[in-house]
Length: 190
Image (cartoon, rainbow, N blue to C red; front, side, top):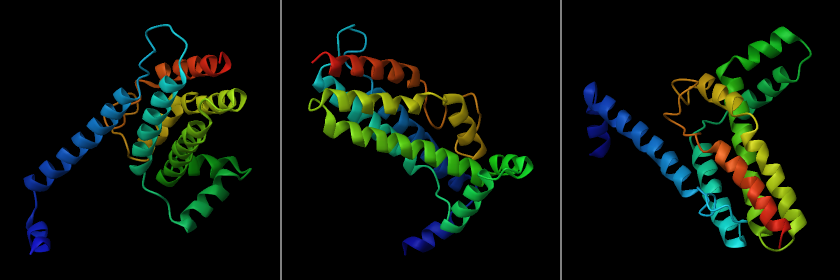
């Protein structure tokens, strides 16, 4: 029976399986990050509707993959951490910020915002330039606090080092921010 085989695994076998999962999960975000590289970025051309769609879909896939890696708090934990983070008691606020639950809540909130932002962009592509441009502007918040997001990932145990992109790749954020500006330019020039 399969469950018996799984329960008999221990020591080095488990470490190898877990290491393989970590490598493949990291590779997945690296691959998705490359997929989201706008094809017209280096050309200096205004991004066409097709290029914006390719970019938005690629970045949405990246953020969805990152979102799936964040463990979610129970409703009770979420309510508690929201209360602690909205208190005027500085000591309680700082303590909540430094807890794993606080980091998970803030990381999930930031990443879910990005998923939502790109889901909102896609149906607007090429239809209403003003609404599309505003949606792109809104999405730029995803790249405004990369260091803060990295710290949340670290405190939540999602990455092993706060300054190194091993588990969750974030090197493309500045290019995606610049590409969002180019997307805004593209939709306003149509």
